[in-house]
Image (cartoon, rainbow, N blue to C red; front, side, top):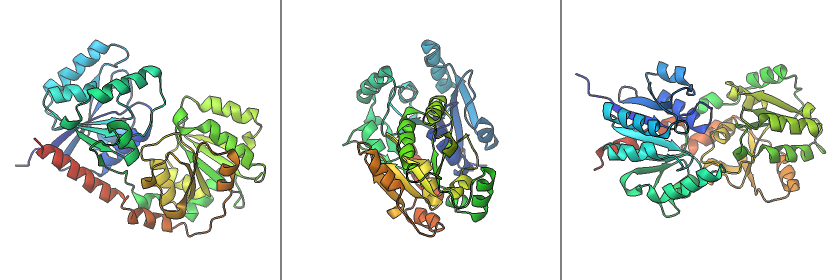
Length: 369
């Protein structure tokens, strides 16, 4: 008779694609399915990201009322779910502590709880900032397992002296290995010549990603590099605003909006440089993917050093003048792009290492008092 699988309920998946959703699909794909049963908490009236893919992997979804629509029904549904289902671990993936009811109720019901900090800052509404501050003191940190994607993310959510475990994001590095074939294919699709320099940014059009500044820097960069092209991959609430700005600045011929794409490895192969001036990040998957593809990356000083591999990354302070950013983008680099995957593996940021560390955390939590 087979032993019962360890049941893990993941809290935090949304209907909009982001880092948490990408991460959840990844760990659901690579976790030992003979050992673990992954389930997901989702909201009624919405379609969670990757629902079909996750269900095909054997995952189950449990739907509760949306918090903002009916708070009492939201609490009632969480309690009812926890009373009905026998989860071993409730794993909460959070960008902030503005919503910790699933964690607190799980503790009350006797479940083991992991709070996983997925970000290192949170530029959101005043209400959310206040709730985050209040809940920072309400969260019983000694009764939960605190995990973070980086030192920055852990310190931001649990305090500079907080007791947390860092679990860096891992990557299926072979998937992102540089490909000349993909490079030629994408450049042909986008009608780009082999001589044109292509700069790429991957990220949702949200305040965090700092698209306004990104466009300002690229506009200045075009003065000395008029044939360069900027590729923007992603969707989000600020996309139309940024598109309007690009048209107003009359640089629309040099910027390509690709929307949401599933061929990220191919797009990275087609590019020459990666530009990532985020206000804050936890541990950016997009950056690690770019590094695996062997790209030279220009990033903001808010990016954790744990995600920056050797000389592939150049960090610039957000407060620095645009000229310093354009100078960084204009640096000439010459290395074998196939070394990118090797560097990711050497940093132990490949998927096999991450899955082993996640398994270690789960077993430690299961065996804790």
